[in-house]
Length: 197
Image (tube, rainbow, N blue to C red; front, side, top):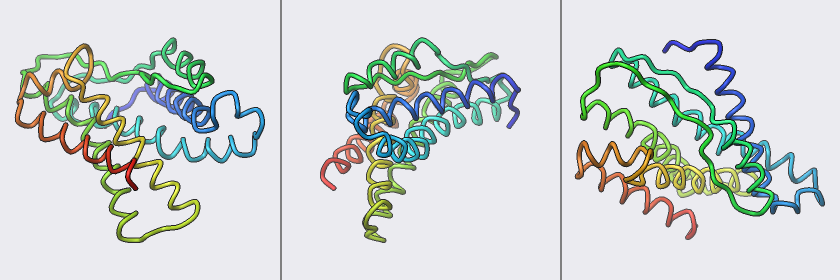
């Protein structure tokens, strides 16, 4: 894959601010000021769950677009990143940290597959966490890590599969409805599992 210097900087900033927003959310919003030690532990967790889940999601869009010989670069949405941090202080989050912008001649099928690549990465990460929870039965911080990773990545996949607006799901739905509903059902099952486990 080919990355520009600007793109690497944008990915890093988006990863960092997304991780901070989720760490604040996990800390209970404004409650983070009561226990900064807990916040920094949760920031580490967020960096490797929400942060990595988001970065790999965007990289998969880019990877497939470049495989189709298209120009593809990530750009951060700074207003949305700062809003995510502000909202997380209130105990909820709206995460739209950025997107991969693509240029070139592209068919509906290729566009659908590129759009699906991101949510599929989150589904894979969520499934890996679910498998580890069942097979290894980890305890303590490791158990918490896999549970958080399952919850965040299943949510990211489900959120991005919404079939309208600028969400990935719209392009997938317009390309292949059967593929769309299969992936949507898997994402729903994984998200439900994150509440049950």
